[in-house]
Image 1 (cartoon, protein in one colour):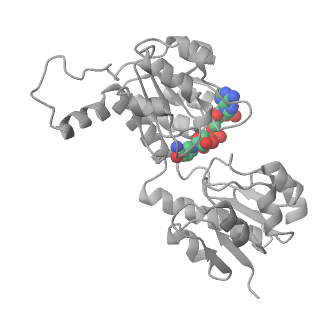
Image 2 (cartoon, helix red, strand yellow; image 1 turned 60 degrees about the vertical axis):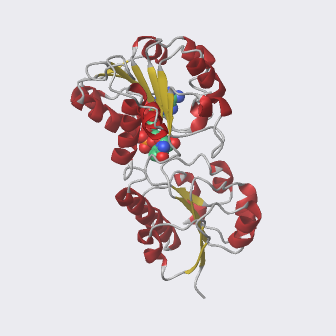
Length: 325
Ligand code: NAP
């Protein structure tokens, strides 16, 4: 009998085609409720999950002792309890690398849109309230030649840096370790987070969500930013304290923000929804057709590798292998 594979959401066929040898259940297009998920997971050897599903110990136990792999369709895996998986010998995989350019595009799009007030401008046109071109109308800070601080200088952070170089921006970065090659390529300089916040005109956040990055940008950090600064977050919502950010934007302590991610998606802090100086995207960082296909294909490749007892390309808990492979 073919092993049971659960795919928690409808995904591009590039992700389901390679699973033809298995007994595959694909849940619908929407986010499955917990009960549906627990029921569907029962007896699964493999789960292909997305960021909207919490993959915790309860879910793994509902799947049972035959569960070998959770292949997350994302580079971030903060929705998966990796320790619980490792304890159970379940391999967890992610999809790094294939979404770097697309996610950096989204970050740069938000940077430009927030600086040049695109959301506000579009609302003006659609409302019928636009009366004429105006010399002072909807002006925002110039992007070209300005200082960009990149917090988290990994795959996506560096892709953001490459875009910024095309706009003649000067690059400063914060990461746990130095990146000499990227420093040379992008003429980038490492700085402390404190220095970045107090000196940069634009700050873009690209760290994973971990215990160490939760509320990395909070009220105290926002208070040190320049009044003309723009903050962009395409990492994970809880890396920025959303209530503190809403307060800073409301009081115009910073110029604007561009957000793709939120603390309690799909909820957005109610104050943010009322503000003109924030551009809000619904977690579309990697949402190009090509990239979503590539992510689905890579998630499936990881899943199939573990099912075949092979080393998957992107295990995040290689310590689980001893039991699982
Ligand atoms: P990555 O290559 O692992 O880069 C992460 C960077 O963050 C690394 O440079 C790392 O430093 C740095 N970092 C970690 N903890 C830090 C801390 N406390 N302070 C400063 N820097 C820290 O990851 P990636 O592929 O670029 O992805 C980054 C994140 O973007 C993902 O985890 C995911 O949550 C998010 N993402 C969001 C979307 C979206 O749709 N909005 C799409 C894709 C990814 P070291 O290099 O020194 O370790």
